[in-house]
Amino acid sequence: MNNLIKIPLYVFALIFVGLVFGYLTFKILSFSRTVEVPALYGKNLVEANELLTGKGLYLKIEGEDYDSNVPPGYILRQDVPAGNKVKERRGIKVIISKGPRVHSVPVLVNETLLNAEYLLFQKGLKIAKVIRVHSDTVEKDMILAQKPTPDERVSDTITVLVSLGPHEVIYYCPDFKGMSLEQAREIAERLNVKVEIGGYGNHVKAQKPWPGTHIKKGEIIYLQTE
Image (tube, rainbow, N blue to C red; front, side, top):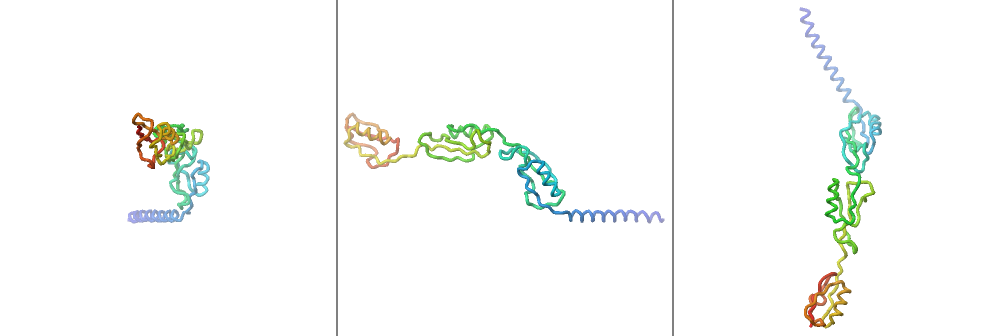
């Protein structure tokens, strides 16, 4: 009979001890020290591990990713931002840089914008910014300069300077009426405009566009002779 009474008492005692132990464990964990997460970006694994160990934390490598700014083997990202507060004995997950995806940028100067985009696409790159400027020497849509150049460090952000061609030069159309054909051609050549002649005479009797009309460099002036 006494033995039957003792068994429930033992069970109750075990349950009680378990509850007390669980409560104490919970209290100990809940009162563990809160620490500030250090900045790990750009650090190598040894440096990062030392920083975390000093805070009572530990390093956990989660994976790798390409990046043209962070050297291979250095930390690219961390799951808990620097400055955040966490409990001690927590693992901080990090992504390690694999370096740039490609090791050189192709020569883009003197290529058309379309060709340059294709060359970069083959290397897994793309143009991030296009700056257009006028040029008297380079045709429209041709690339004048690039950043980075082929001898500089590779970057995912590629900028190109693209030609808009020469500035549009606007004139007031002269009055060619009554001029000799030779004189009209000479003036048109100075203005960098073209002339088309109608008729078989040596003097201009009519023109299009009319005198005083805006004309651009390279435009065609139609002259009727008599």
